[in-house]
Image 1 (cartoon, one colour):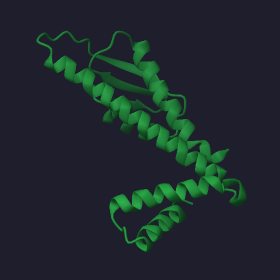
Image 2 (cartoon, helix red, strand yellow):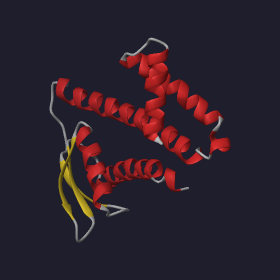
Image 3 (cartoon, rainbow, N blue to C red):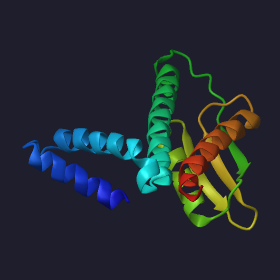
Image 4 (cartoon, rainbow, N blue to C red):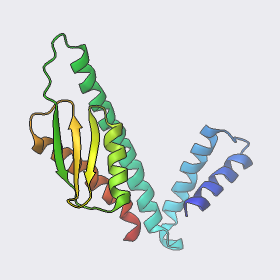
Amino acid sequence: MLGVHVLLAVGLAAFADALSPMGVAVAFALVFVLMKLSARLFGMRGYVLRVELGLRFAVWFVLEVLRASLDVARHVLAGKVAISPAVVAVPLIRREDWVVTLLSILLNLTPGTLVLHYAEDEGVLYIHVLDTDSAAAVTDGVRRIEARLLAWLGAGRL
């Protein structure tokens, strides 16, 4: 369905003589609105929901990365260095390779965190954090990312 969506967006952008990245993005949004309006008619509710959740996840994650970047910048620019680095073992809800890989990539993209190791037999992800008050806070943050990721990726199976 994504291929059809992209194909329609590129075709619409070409037809409107706006075949540029911005033109295709606008056409993609317009096609999405049309798909959303006709989702029940053509049976595309799962796809539309998945795209909506994906956009929400992307916006939420970008805001989380910005928040983490500001937090790291605050530590770097402060005259004194009073950080509490830690390595935290976080048990994962889902142990499939693709879920662990995506979660690890997202955690590595977040400033102040680094995935060190995944113990496959235990289902535990070892994460180094730049500054934390407790392991529970880190575990809660990872759980929040994992829950949103799974909600998005599981949306097509509804």
